[in-house]
Amino acid sequence: MERYNTSLIAFLKDFIMEDRWTLLQERVAERSRHVTAVLEDIYQPQNASALLRTSDIFGFQDIHIIENKHRYEVNPKVEKGSSKWLDLHRYRGEGDNSPRCLDTLIEHGYTLVATSPHVDAYSPENLPLDKPIAILFGTEKDGLRADTMERCTHKLRIPMYGFTESLNLSVSAGIILNRLRTRLESAEVDFKLHTAAQEDVLLDWLRKSLKQASLLEERFKEIHS
Image 1 (cartoon, rainbow, N blue to C red):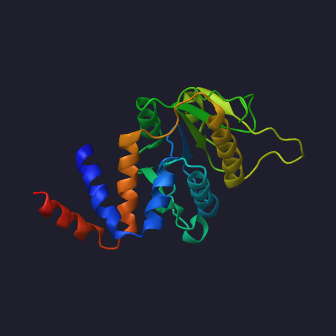
Image 2 (cartoon, rainbow, N blue to C red; image 1 turned 30 degrees about the vertical axis):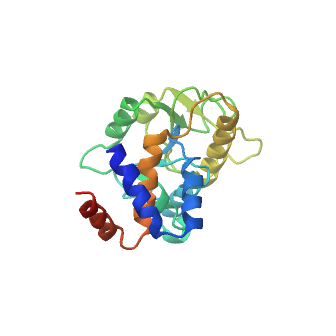
Image 3 (tube, helix red, strand yellow; image 1 turned 60 degrees about the vertical axis):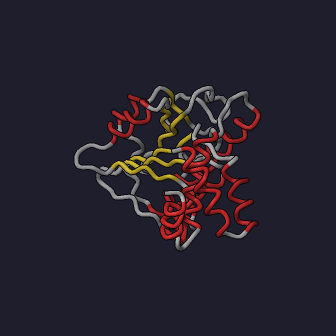
């Protein structure tokens, strides 16, 4: 599969502008799954969609979306096409989808980190980064569910010095993801995508960048059959 992806990428890149190809290579080299955001039953599409832009801007590839009572709707005016460059993992089956998402993240080696302004917790400055972490965000009104909080190994809060008790989702995510990315850049942590994962992402981006990607891929298969 890796050889197939490598050859297909080499074929498809000839159908996009050279400067676009250079940009895709530069961006995928900075991509990371070491930190991922998890949204539990978010129903405010504006703030949630702004988080997609934030995740893309700081180079974090995945967003995990838990849909229990509420369907997550992307707001195109807010996310500005950022979802095109991200992998959105939706948990929307019948029943309780939160445990399924948390189990999946744990199986993939993530440490679960709950965000809350009302607990003694780590800050973005001292949260351990030696292992992959999943930052869980709940609704602005109620926060994360109690049983979800209990399953999280770490708690995270943003230090505040005014009278207001909380930040909205998009601002919180922006502060947290920006600080964690900055810390990772100077940490002794191998946090960027490895070669095979970069190729998977790059191939996905090429497919999304070409209007006739499926036809071109069929041509590639015919040539190499």
